[in-house]
Image 1 (cartoon, one colour):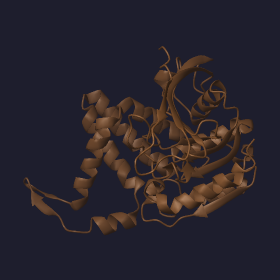
Image 2: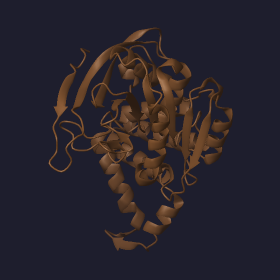
Image 3: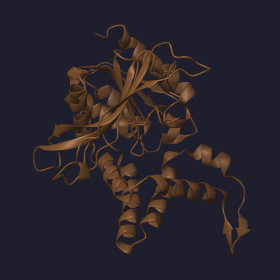
Length: 343
């Protein structure tokens, strides 16, 4: 596949908030050399990326969960990003002070000869991209969920390219109960592929996933009302929410991509002792996918200095998306720790 040519856009000033500096945004793709963990040797892979912010400023890598893409923030042609409340001019990850680099996650189809994709593959792709773009060393890697796993792999494998790791709702290995829940989701999708009911299966898998992303307190508060009789059966309040989430996911995501990245979460296994980069961890007690106990273990075992901030939230694993106001000072402080030392 030919590389997507990089397109560089100047980001114009807005009427309400003129930028303090001239922004630039580069959207494109690069072919990089990789040796996939589950592959048959070296290969070339096309990495699709967005690199945006203040020209000449230090770069911060930002990666999210498996359904996140490279559009972490607003850019030309994109009015919003999946984490725009934390990434933007004047935000915790301030595009007037840094440039943000983010990629679309790789899947086995991007890695000739590979049977699966690993968090190490994603980290290696980012490291190769850092070299190819002439960045050299990034100020920080801010990762949430699968992005935190990728960040840990990046810090373990490429310590010379990173000053600080900020990992939210992600640990060194998946919890077995979370793996069990994802295994059932993948089984539903495989059944849909075999039976020709792919959209219906992906819809149901996403509905099941939503029950693991959010906390029990939120469900109790939002869906406590009784059922109502509709179309010949009782409908419970939570069903409309889940069905909407399923339909929305099917409209923007591919079943085989879901299978590959869901499996990649469960293949993730990084030795914390190999991570010597200063690390800021953030966890949520209501998170049933990444229990706080796993983050406590990770903090104890990390090879470098590490802090753990605990944020109470009713939103479970999705707190990293929902609690941006409370997370902003934690992320800002972590970046300020290394801004002054950047060279």
